[in-house]
Amino acid sequence: MRSEQSDEQWDLYTKDREKTGCTHRRGDAMPKDRYRLAVHVCIFNSKNQLLIQQRQTYKKGWPNMWDVSAAGSAVSGESSAQAAQRELMEELGLEADLTKVRPFFTMSFPNGFDDFYILEMDVDLKKLCLQEEEVRQVMWAGKEDLIRMQAQGIMIPYWFLDRLFDVRGSFDAQWERRHDIQYGMAGFRHLESWMSLAEIVRQDFPGMESDEAMNDFCDTSIQYMKQGGAMYAADGNMIVGALLFQAAEAAGHKIRFLAVHPEYRRQNIAQQLLEHMMCRLVKGQDVVVETFREGDKRGGAARAFYQSFGFVPAELGTYQGYPVQVFVLSGNTLK
Image (cartoon, rainbow, N blue to C red; front, side, top):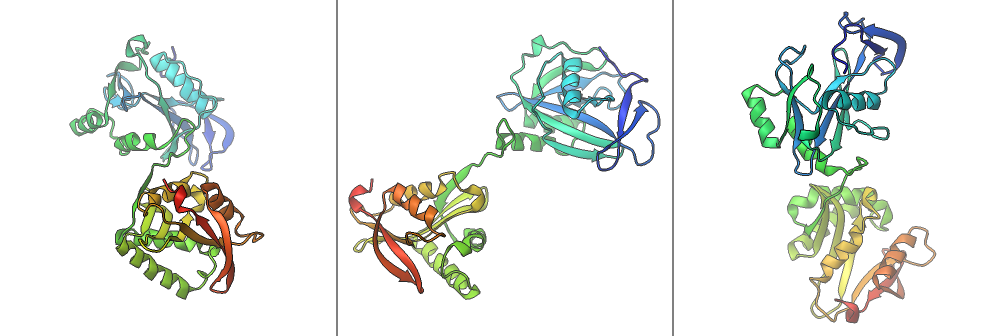
């Protein structure tokens, strides 16, 4: 297995991470304004534990300290992923195909770029083949374990280490961000984000174009929040869906406003908001909403959505001079 070789050659990069075509021998002083490529691999198991290794006592750089799963420098001719894949095999005897895997994040250090990979693998530690020259031992560690080890001074003090446990669960296998959408009744504490969403979608709602109209909408939203007629969908603290509705006992129910953040559409948020609203309505009463007329280029998606939910087109009308059409959801269809 390859250990720290003094004749190891590294590719040199510019500050923009472009290869210069020159190489550098490990151990020599780095040329000015030239940089190398390093990699770190962090392996998590299904118990949200990180595989960590203890570096050998005689290893250069952080000897005897606990480190993440594997790390090293890319040798000349290697890509970042190839270097990460090789380090896993050399240090742990662990085979992994990183051909289609990108670094989760990259950090700059004085002499180069450091790519961090996060992998999810339930590794049997007994089957690992540790590189004697590099690795003293390995173990699984949870978030609190690593915080304690850093406090004891036996873990390399990566400032972001505890955060890895939080962010890894926020992304899927392709590192697309997972959205954990929460639904609830909106209150005054949601108002800033609520109005931010309204600002984003105001061009989709006739009558909301002016600043005066937005101020009126803010006042209306506060009123509905006080009356229990404002419902939100949120990704963390950000409001990504908003619904204002009138729950009347004698008259029919009416939807006053329904909007979803453009980045969160096609995630069934609007449907979820309506379904949550239905649980709060009086059974047997119709639900009405005013939306765009047929043929209006701005309203194709809205009309299709309401019809897919069971709303039926009804009479034509106007809203602040803009032509609209009433859609009705019969009270007999409410669950």
